[in-house]
Length: 132
Length: 132
DNA sequence: TTATTTACGACTATTTTAGTCGTATATAAA
DNA sequence: TTTATATACGACTAAAATAGTCGTAAATAA
Image (cartoon, rainbow over all chains, first blue to last red; front, side, top):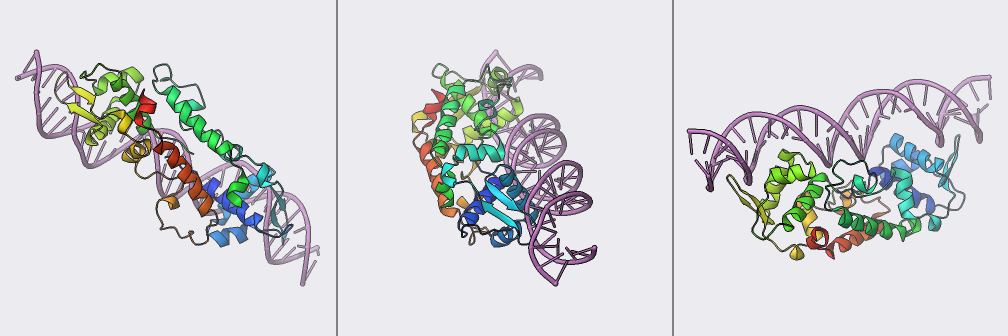
């Protein structure tokens, strides 16, 4: 409960790794996977996802790899999480109103308050807070 | 990701329900399950858990049920979550140090910071913040 | 004695998360 | 032009976590 997924974890590790490179230097999926003992195929998919989202840029072919293209200071963490995993909310009803129990539910207000607190916390953070 | 479980959700709903009763009045598992469309057997187990933890008290037999025994103002939410679900941490490594990747891991510090923020947030809340 | 309720462990089902595989495409270098 | 190395991506499988069910026992009020 209240855990981030490995997908997000591996994405953050990779971004920090890329950030520490000299400007313009590339890292391949294999390089990162080896460095942090992450399954290579899985990591590849995650990097592809980051690439589709334009957070990093891919270069194909031998000696190819990835580099950061977006300033981490400009990426809001709530947004980042939702980019990777879809809508974030501590309960499904905080996302989606199709819940049979909704009418009866007696904890909606406090749950939404908690939800907002968590979002606010991540809204105040950028990727740079994690990858620097 | 970053979700609470139904176990916790149902526990909170039940506690709020019990709180709204007149002092000394009991609610059975069935009553609560019916009111919020929760599977009765599942809820029963959760109430038994709360009872073992002395947050509520059980009365057996016909016309039996549960009532609150602990002042919700005195129950810290971090503690409550951990009572119900075990240690809380956004990544396993924030709990347990047996991770092969730990040495290499480059995001430990920021992850721990986030973790502390979430814990602090729940440390400042009591059950009463949710059940009132 | 019966009906109703809690107690509790074992079991099953479902959903989510994690990880693998096959195949395609790009491209640098031999 | 061939080969080796990379990314791209969807389909698939495996594992783990979560959710829910069932059977049986014990207490107790009526």
